[in-house]
Length: 148
Image 1 (spheres, rainbow, N blue to C red):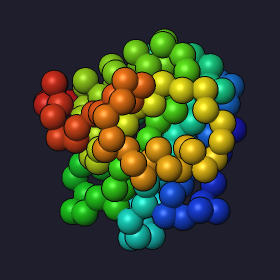
Image 2: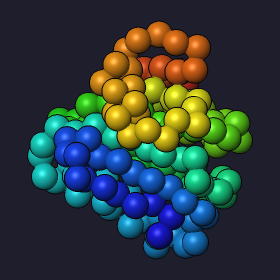
Image 3: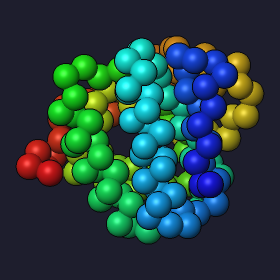
Image 4: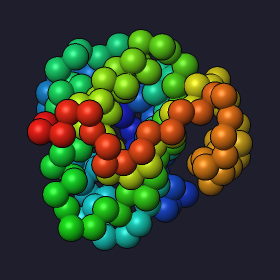
């Protein structure tokens, strides 16, 4: 599986990506796990660790944008914010592309980092409003292409 969900520190949900997406079904399972968190109806935050991820096919960017659009229709957004750990500019550009097509439903912070200490990473999520040169803030509800 290219994405592993860890809820040991709930309401912080850690999602670790590794390798490549092997099939549409595998990607759909990743999205379903996200929806399952919504169905629990408890507020949560994500830490996405993309640093072990291979460069995905562009079609998954479109699927992700349409998934975000679908989430936007929910009456309440249990996702409060996300921290995305990135160490590859190609992955960052794909994330930029997704969020250009469809803005996130909650604040997103892209952190360009090699940090591995779990405490420091969790602290970064909690302090994500702090300005620093390695963190990019992506505001919810500001899609460049709103009809998607």
